[in-house]
Image (cartoon, rainbow, N blue to C red; front, side):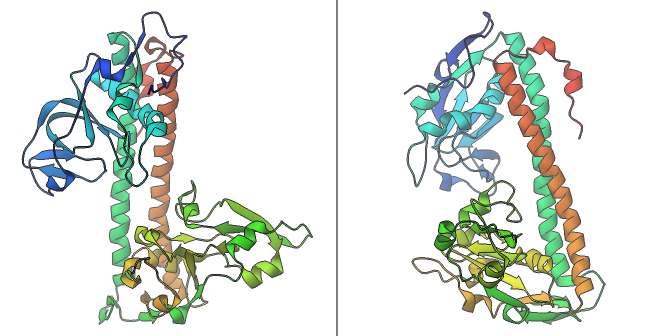
Length: 412
């Protein structure tokens, strides 16, 4: 089965060629089971996930490109030195082209190119033959090095933003723990059944400070309804667990696959209000611990449940606190994991009595969120630039001599 080239090759310069990946490098597989890794060890152990594994031994000592054969199929890493690799990680080495050039080409194209050849549903994987048949445009060596230099600058900037995002996320997690146990006003602490908190705070059951909601209009009925246009309607959303993963919905439901315009009266009577914290209530999705905030009157599908703050509680304070709470603590681990209203009502949360103190805490967290958003925006812009430049350079629309590499220095 051939894998079609990711670029249009008919117009490539005569000095270029197109070769199959299996002809320009050696493709092997790792030698270890993933369970043979450890949290400590002298040598990196590359698997098909982004987790960091180590090994006390190594099977490879080479300049290599590693390709995930299952899991995150097509994800690539570049490494030079001694390492171990999982059985379903492909190890590419003994290159007849400039290895950093090939790595950056595969980094930008491989996931998309291999997508239609993925086999298996519960554990997707890619066959070696499909990897070997990936077609690679090969310019002269000097051009390869120039392309690698140009794309490498952008890739380094992307990796820097990824490191900053990880660091900022870790800082936010530590900040949340600190704020919900110490507050901001330097109060003495008291010990409670959910841990330390400022003396003036209360450990409040969710049932006393929130409404546990699901709405009375079913998701199926919502899909079958027509939008109204009587001058007294509002836009409403219908959301499923999958809508949590839509672009732009990383924090709030900014968009949904199901949108209707309904009368204000019906929305207020049957739907979940804006600023409701929503999360999965049934199935494996609970374990993801994803929480989202509604931005409109919303219909929840049967696999979702919502928690809506009462007047004594800021909705953003509730939302941020929920990010410190593991839904697994209250989940029935039966054949189909689930949690229900009765499980949420007695859950205790640390609560300042004054709304202004809640708002102060929300503002501190929002400052960190804005910085995270800024780094994510930079990361996304750099990724788009990388893909655009990759396509233009791999189709010879732009050539290295057209670029001033000094102008491509990425500002940090």
